[in-house]
Image (cartoon, rainbow, N blue to C red; front, top):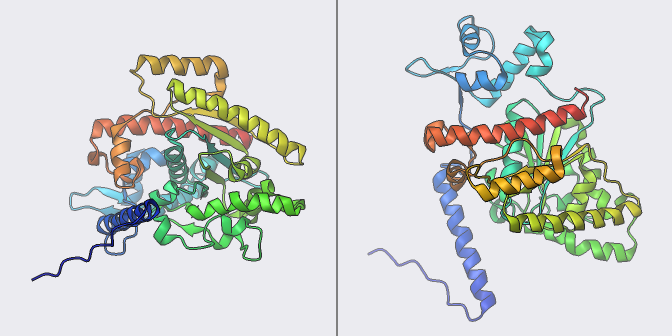
Length: 402
């Protein structure tokens, strides 16, 4: 007879009950992850069809077929039906091959920043929950990697949803001193940023993961200010200072800011070269964004008075979870465009069951085959996401003077 699983002792107070619930949920999430990504419980990225690769790289499928027949470029995997597919690594090899053999178009194939072009640091922010801040950060980072950029994603949210989407469960996989806090803390345990950067299954993206440890920076900073810790180590310069340590390794940094205007967010804004404010087109969200902007302006004025600088190449509002058939939402989008004009991205990220369903398995649409969530829904959602991300990419290239 199979022995019954031992039951945890019943909680005697509210604190114990909440702790028990947290442990039960965390264990269940870990079990689900282990079942979803066996046997190593690590995520991996699918291969891309030749048609997808042709669209992403910017050549015709027939051209890729001819390269394959001529034995040029990376060797794709052939299915039993003769369909060709490429890994993301092979896609990058293809970019390099094309840039060498078609030098006039080299920058289109390998768009990495050149000498004299500054590192672009994109802070994605809003202190209103549900504005799709993490989803925007995830899809933007993955889109940029697919285009051939070297991307560093920084998870500054103690809830660490971005880290979870990249396959790192914060309470199990991220230890002490393994978040950005380890690189910006005030004591002798501070370590170089390079030591906390992790690889991801998505080639071209490295991750600085997050977890609840990040809250320590919010607690320690007031104490450091009372001690008079200033100079180059003043709190709002710390994020930019550690990013500078790895600047040569990346083209673009995407920061998923916490949903609050604390010291971490101020540090991210001081490090940023661009700000993306996500906004769900509902009146309560617009009212919240008004407060967010007022508080941001006040805080940054204080920082500037203390010697900081908000030096942004562009600020854009990203309309997220948008239902284009919803009349009140359309009116709010029109209101935003009337007020902020070109500072609102022309493209909007549509509300989609395809994105929501992909998220249930901690994946993005870029990671799924079209048939996994319905081809029509997949195509509509991906088109809207790509349009948003392509617009941001064009702004980055504009900042580089291209």
